[in-house]
Image (cartoon, rainbow over all chains, first blue to last red; front, side):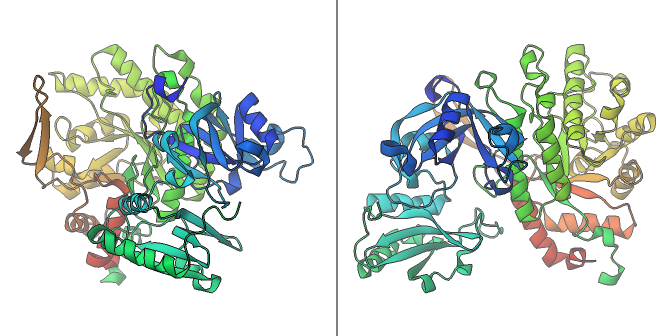
Length: 254
Length: 332
């Protein structure tokens, strides 16, 4: 069954998970399940579909999403029950989510990651999965973030969304990162809760807690009100900062 | 004076909750909404629910109403293949229940309008009882304490109030004991007011949920509000914290969009709000007055389910407003 011949909405949630070895891919394709350790599960696992971002182990299919499948069940079981052939694994007794899926389907076109960046889990929608040109199109942001992303695409600004940084055990995200030849620009949106005066906690720790400047980043803080009121001016500021660091480094790290 | 405030009316102990949909984080679903042919399953709903619990934990919200269709088609008479979902999810329910307990989260269900326990049509009444039983089994499987309840209304009048009340009582008595323990009865805004549900309580001992806006809309006996609240609070078993529903009446203009059936032309009409409609947010002055009045009368402590259209955003906003307008409620 494909998305077209059932009654699922285009906003059906999809979880993009990382597939980093051929054995797990065979399990997903032939046995119809994927696992996530419960203790290290992301904040969002619920979805109607599961899609796989394939890493460097997959030859010509590497660094892209090619397959997805409908989720049937979420089970919870010790790792030892899921993989009995590994009785000595150090996490044999730990609980895992076993996500059972239907037959894998090919996407109409693969969704590549343009840069070698860390991908973990991406919650997205079926509509985005079926129409994305690249990984950055999958993320769902607030109204202003989406507007800025569309403007970047229209103006050929080669940015990465939700760019991950990690320090010790903490994970941080930059709203938009522009990786240039002579340095990187971090664009941080300010003041974009769903309702302006209701405090919404962000998914990740505040990026202010990560010393971006000390790690060589140029920081641009852009108030969301400016994006709404003066988008061309915002784009000028961003382009100026990019020009100081040379043009974006297109696919430089492959 | 803060020193005179009863500890149980502090915001530390009075939980504020919201029903079903999360607005503060885009994309969080309340349950598996797929149609039957796409194989929806309770286990998928539980994964969505787990994500909501992560969000609630981050926001410090400790009260939540789950979707009544959490287990899709679980009692559908023509789809028996969906009937075993709760048994199939025994492990997942137990594990999620542990999360609920560790977060000190108070969960509940609320019967949908299609479930009418006192329906004259026996098939509808039977299916309503089956739905309530399924929800009770979910709460039991999660290992939750007695404060996790299923809230229901009496139902319809069908032209004879006495018979309607009697049918509810009979239906209640027919439920298995473990289901009766989970049920709580709420006053509604048209048919059965607090006096009616107090009558049912005397017959059955079912605990009563006081609904603020329903009370304002329908109080046939003219019972003073705090007296009605007290009657409801005292109906709960010793050691089980009562819960109350609170919402403010909508005052904003309604915009009604209509599409002409033949021309497909769309028209917009303005209408004044109706007093039974919920506002987007909670009027903090109404809420503070209500809580203070209960405190002044030394009533039993309770949790509050906020039935506002802005859902979790209304909870977050009210907490902020309480800190401003009633700071004594923010600490012991």
